Image (cartoon, rainbow, N blue to C red; front, side):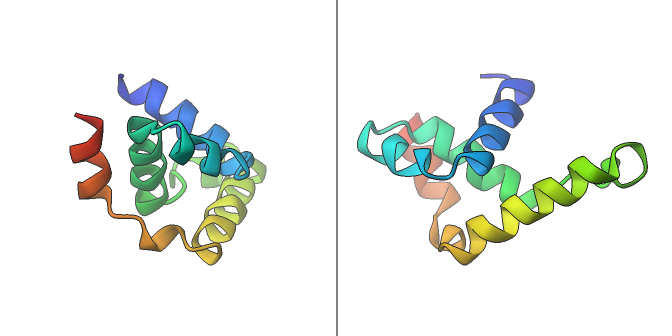
Length: 83
């Protein structure tokens, strides 16, 4: 999976967080790793000037993900499971 695919998957899961549980059930570790990696990097700073509405939306989604316990995910473990 390339970096653009990972970004699209992560953004989709951030916007549809009810699907995160489905990814766990289906053992879609690569998707979950992409999500955690994206959330750890935070919303791209380049969007602040180019698309402020999208930046705010992504920040809100990342905040909601973290409040729901997203910080508890281990990126290293998800990456091991994905390989």
